[in-house]
Length: 369
Image (cartoon, rainbow, N blue to C red; front, side):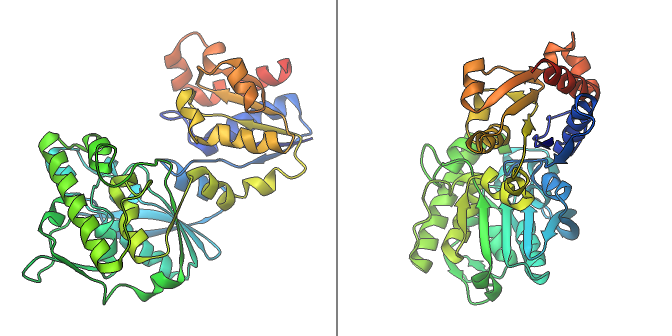
């Protein structure tokens, strides 16, 4: 019997790899002779890099500029000639204390430095997971790190961050890294928000990065200037669905490179080899901290279930909590499901001893399936 175990993280308790190990313990308690293959998954946000490393990618580290200019050590991954970069490692919200000032000043410069590191390593494809960003700078900082000059009306470089773009009058791509023309940039962007307007990046996402209404309005103005400058310089209208992800990070790359936007799970499943693992598989286990309505919008566990369902493979789900109905789960090919809250009386115990209870819940659901 071949069992593929492909969970996402249990946020606040277990990484995807730790969850997979706990599920494997439960599987082997029921099927001791099973051939168990663990493929931790993610959807482009937090945990993306961990899933790539768990799948065997090589960890690389670089000292880069953090979102407010202070250097940070950031890890990225390389698998052959494909690199995976989680921009939050260099430009993430967890690297600062959010405030209106940080929302205006945060830059993606360090993420551009990681792209340069990947190019130096010979990467031909670069996958960018862009969740958890601190900045609303349209990717201008990352492009500046790669040689783009963003200038004020006196010809001087503008300050970093979204607020710096309020002074921008021109862009100069003469020194932009020429290797960008020969690399395949694939950006994981599950949200479909445009760059501007009431559904744009400043309006929808800047508050969670610390912006108050005044800062939000300034960032909206900055993104308008950025959009205009990019259109004038390249002829590309970057105010398109998905360009508003991660503080507008994709927009500059859509203008200056052949970057493409993709659902996060799609990119990660190809990088981690999930689809190959499903070949000749008899059973799939997946799960995450909470299987809920949000899970139905491209989250990794239900995407795993859909792949398995379409291949005719039964799926068992293990989660911290489950609020989806049995009919909803069945529609994804899930034949059995268990919540940790089904096997433990107190939620705090499930959080504190998640590994133990994931293994126990896995064993129970398989014995009852």
